[in-house]
Length: 188
Image (cartoon, rainbow, N blue to C red; front, side, top):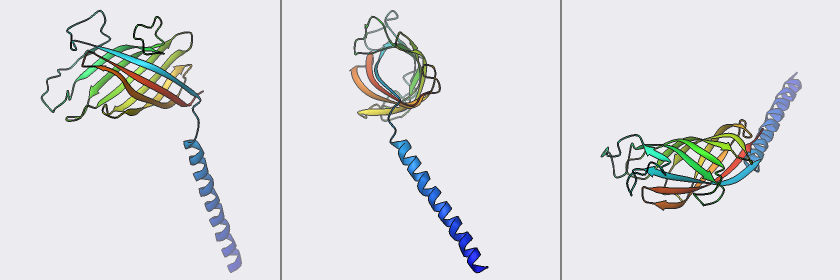
């Protein structure tokens, strides 16, 4: 009888140990996955009312809250709505933008430049059709920043991945360009 109980406990222990090892191997392989889609786009933002005055013809974004909150050394609380062109290269005046970035960002730290983005990339080109939804924190002073790709439609149906930002150009508060390296790890 004792031998049967010891045998049962040994079997259960081996079963649990093997599942633990298999589970850790599964997690490890998931972290080492290669992207199923990867591409680089450039995000161009021209702020209405930035340095240089008001330019409604060329502006692609506008502040929708008061920038003068006086709650820190930066523009804490400023919220910007945008409809920005996305190109395959650094050229703002690319004849055919690949997509439009439509959404908002707001500055969310009092003493360090940092923003939080939530937007949709709307694709309507010969390369792609559909949308990608991106959101997350953008600590602007870092060389690269990762935001989450949390879903999509069309060619990007239920996509998940990472969009790595890198500031490519900055002209005061009037214009900035971000290089976005988009890596999708779930593609259907």
